[in-house]
Length: 190
Image (cartoon, rainbow, N blue to C red; front, side, top):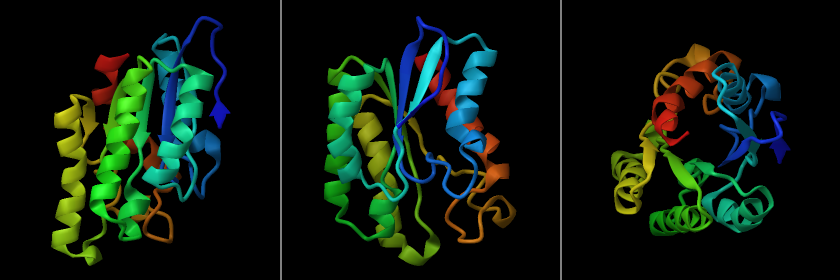
């Protein structure tokens, strides 16, 4: 877990995610989470961003790690960016839904506000599975009454020049767009 330094009286903002938030394949200082800390600082928002993202993580892994992270960091805001690896590995969608729901419940029970970042799967997963997977995020946001970014990778995944050679992970040039995708839903929660 990487905590970015800011003022002593700051509130904590916890990002729990996978490679998309862990700056996979690029220098961490260029990742969208680090850019988020910079934007918060520039706008005099007194938050300390803690990046608890792990490349390859699943909703099960996130759910397992979340209680300790909540206790250790006492965040006032939690951004959940998980589910992509569940989908890419063809995990049971009910389990993914249940894991994310429990993460939201735990974060809210700790007193934190929650922002859920929705992800989409590549076209080769077929429309049935892809559509069912995509609806998980909207269903959870509505049922749990939490803020949602429906398509975290919007404006990035469709542009090969913004992606790394693997076609799955966003490159350095894509990171400001990822932050811009999150920002409108995040601002009301700050």
